[in-house]
Length: 212
Image (cartoon, rainbow, N blue to C red; front, side, top):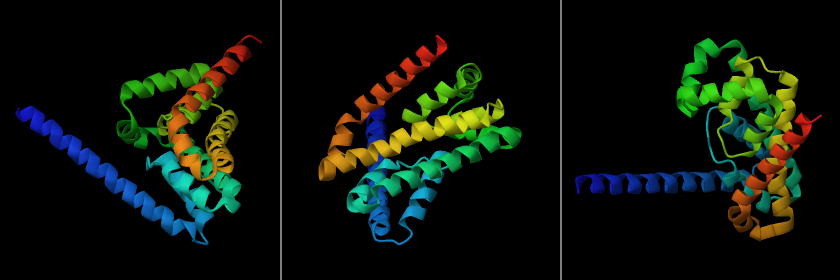
């Protein structure tokens, strides 16, 4: 009985936390809609999302794209740019400062076992592995750190990041362009299926590339 009460308390606390985050995101979005610094704000938010603050960026981007459709493609571009800069920053941390910050990042975003798995796959699968992580809803921080720690090709890492994040953000823009006010509900409904389809496509291209 006591365990049940504790469990219910944790569920209620989690729901309150989610509601608080949702309110903050709505407030942030409403402030950004009419801001002359909107695009800079999106770039910064994307940088933070890909590095140290795992915020649900789509929750801000989708309503923002709907409200500022004249800036639709610019918003997608700035979100991609912010993520690429963040990826470069994360790579540099892994390359130059892994011994100093590596343990903290691993403990914050994953576990030592997960990091070793990502590191192993980075060494053996590289480009296509980064592409898969860039599309799937998996913390990208570990991939950036592992790429730097293994001294994986910076050019290939950035190329994979640009392609994967462009698919993510320009995909959202495309959904808003064609879906209009229904875009948010459509994205919520088909997001999982779209991620699975893109991941399978990347895996298929990965398999084909290994045959040549």
